[in-house]
Length: 115
Image (cartoon, rainbow, N blue to C red; front, top):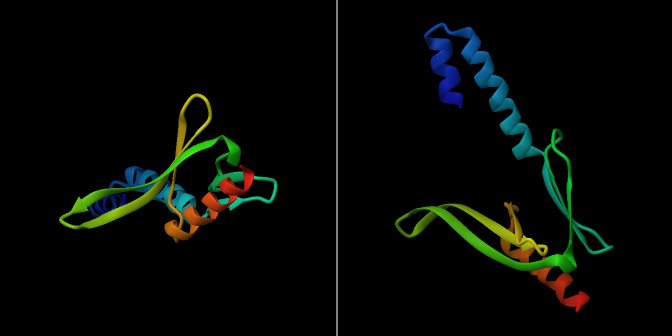
């Protein structure tokens, strides 16, 4: 997106440059303000930026938490995330905490405490 904005400015296309910069601003805002909260009343709250509604997931409804990797280059991976499956309709949400192993451990501890 930044490349598109730069090229739009380079080729003197201000409208497409403004659109690209606004879209880039939304992406950066979403990345910076994403928060995952494990509450004391056994909910996982997912807030993905200021412009979206928070998602509240009951920890008792979580069925599977799996660590996933994508964009593999040889033995290295560029993207690591947690895929949380929950609910009767088998819904899922992808989470990208800074410390995925610690987050998964804390979530599993809360799930075991409920049983």
